[in-house]
Image (cartoon, rainbow, N blue to C red):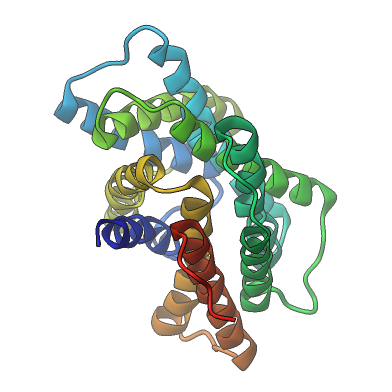
Amino acid sequence: MARRSDLLLTAIAPAIWGSTYFVTTELLPQGYPMTIAMLRALPAGLILLLLVRQLPEGVWWPRAFLLGALNFSFFWAMLFVAAYRLPGGVAATVGAIQPLIVIFLARGLLGAPIKALSIVAALAGMAGVALLLLTPRAALDPIGIVAGLAGAVSMAFGTVFSRFWQPPVSPLTFTAWQLTAGGILLVPVALLLEPPLPALTQANLAGLAYLGLIGAALTYILWFRGVARLEPSVVASLGFLSPVTAVILGWWALGQALTPMQIVGMAVVVGSVWLSQRIQSGAKVPR
């Protein structure tokens, strides 16, 4: 029962992340990806720091900044580069390689065994995402592909290192450290690469508040809690739920068509997530 609760709570995070594209395109000014990423991370991190009133000590200063870079700064930067240079379906499919990377990283850093069915589940998840999002006219840009892969590697390392370095604090405090560090690292990038934001509307402010408080603070508290309690490969596989949410939200809120192929893709993604957690829980998988 406790494991099921951990899975459900952790799954909330990627499910909510699936709304990021909708909020970004519908509520935020376009053309300021690094600035938006910084405003998503830093205010949320500072608010959490005010709540916990605890700063890192000793070795946790460099670790907080390294993890903040892996999970937020570098990951979000590469995510935006891939999103700008690739069709959304290609970018998401490239990023879906992350659970497969996590399987091998967890073996090297945590000594976790590599199970053949775990690899099958990860590959099935990638295939499901491709069915959900890829179109026959999808173009491939080398820089975008490299950025997408770099972002997936960054998040994979961030997930495994967050488990490898078990912090002596709560997930709330751990999230506060990483969000703040990640936001600080994004400040010079945003200032150097982008012009100042225009005057923000009420819709812009609502979108930023949602991405910061819900899409960053709340979700990453749940995510890092799951990283501490569940196997990294299981946590990473839950990330496949994000594109499922994005497609459902586009269909429900924007009137986008939902094709039979996308429905099959959803079923494959959900099946891969189920298979991954069943493997790691030690339960027998039906044959």
